[in-house]
Amino acid sequence: MKKTLALTTALVALSLPAMAQNFATQGAQAEPAQSQAAQISQQEAQPDPAMEQIRYLQTEWAKIKYQVPDQDTQLSLIRKLEEHASKVTAAYPDRAEPKIWEGIILSTDAGIDGGLGALGTVKKAKSLLEDAIKIDPKALDGSAYTSLGSLYYKVPGWPVAFGDNDEAEKNLKAALKINPTGIDPNFFYGDFLIEDGRPDEAKAYLERALMAPDRPDRALADAGRRQEIKAKLAEIGK
Image (tube, rainbow, N blue to C red; front, side, top):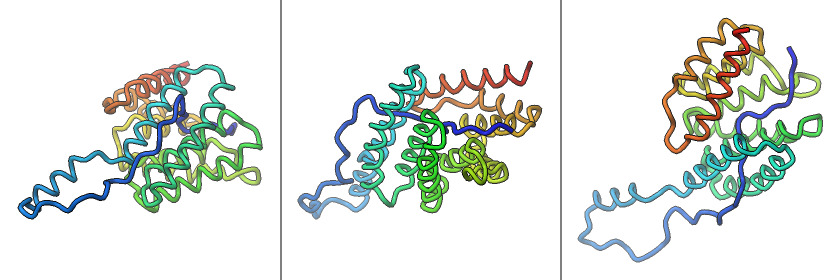
């Protein structure tokens, strides 16, 4: 099976906003009369600054992946994003989500750049995704497993890199167990099965991916992914 360095998902970075502030600013203590339940309710209503950064990365990824055809421009944008993503990861070292997206971004860089020079980039991505799984394997609906699994079947195997179809399948199945109806885990597992010479098995997963429910605030990403799914279905239908 032909192995190529390819992206997992993702690119980002048309403009980089300032880093999110701390989860809450320090201020005056709560009024004594305020009930504990009211305090908890107020805390829950506050936005999660880490997830605000993740939503930014997701949105910009979709713009670059599906709206920027020029590879040189893509590479320039993703490398700007890498700087931003690394700062987000550093700001939230105990959160899995920033590590997942930094891993996705680095994987995308490697896929665009190609060649042996990108091996260091994908190895860093692999390490970030593995760290994310240790922190919270279910973060972002198991996206670390999806991204790590796709790396395992996209990169070359030993002695060039760490490509391994058994590891790919193990991680992709773990993602499907967490998110069985998701568009990405079904798409990537279907794509893996095609690469592994099992197109008849792939069809069911690709069709499931095509029918996956829309994700909130991910309209562009979902539309682009569905075009990829249709192309894969057409490929195995020939």
